[in-house]
Image (cartoon, rainbow, N blue to C red; front, side):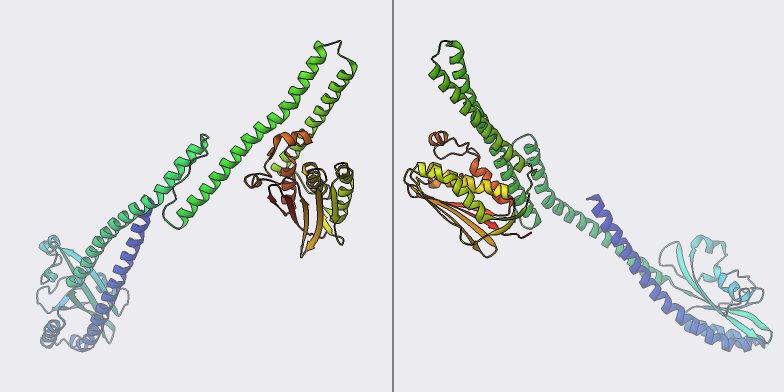
Length: 478
């Protein structure tokens, strides 16, 4: 705020100073031009009389002209002594004025100057020739001197000096200066009030935002900023709240992810521990039962490996360390190959799988990761569709996009679960998912891979009627 006031004050001071200077220059220019013109004209009349020693006529001319011009006229000789005075008071007095010396010594033809005098100097008599002035401000008077050379046959013979009061003009300048000071004070007060209001309007939301950020720094991600006002402050608050919501959601997702991951890893470990303890404490266990336990332990280890592998894949994608190894490929060939690999599983369940890829679909993408996308979608359709069900896999091109659709007539996904279907470890039917060996990470990985390719995956489903997964991928050509 102090800086703001200093800037306003400095700006106003510069403007006020410039304005006073312009007004003063204008007034003095007008006065100087008028005095010079009158003195120069008069010097032309005075010079012949002065050179001819016409004292009486010269004195009359000075007295008459001084009254007309509103000032005092004197003639100074080469030695700077007063020879003639319209007031007849300073005859024989030497005047060491810059304007006089400028004519006699510096060779000027015309000179002008403004001087400030005081009452004390007048009392001493050094400047008594200005005693006719009546100062408007006690103790200070202002006078202007205008001089012109009096030329003769041998050069400059003397100086015509005209002195006149400029007290009124200086008083006007002083008055203007006083008004500027008042205006400056009023402007400073107004600037202070504006600064206070402006500061309150601006800083209050920022102070509130700072307090919220401090709470967030202590771990409370549920805090929000009150959205008020308009313009940039409102947009800042709205943006901050959106960021807070995402951070809170991310924190909850992370906590849920850790809890789910711990559960997924703990369950097979607990199962293996029970079976191993049974084998340890029953050394005489029958061979077929022991073999069954060993197979179950091996399956649990495979399940652990699968969960860990999927977790590592998601971690790589979250840290943006997963890179796409793009190459020229045909997505239709990948769809055919994956469908061919999973067709025996579908035949075992007496399911009817139809594959329609149409013409070739060349792309510039990561073939390995897209294979994982196609495999997970078709594998889920086979696993979760009832025996004798139907599965339709379709690939088509629409403009610059490739559209993969995997449709089944299985149990479908309840509407309340559809928005979470791509969340990690989310299962619609947890018991059935464990029976099928799923980790609850497959669709999350699929979604991440599709996003890495700049695509979109959606699901449409009705409970009891089946599900349709639709993947849209942009076709890039390398």
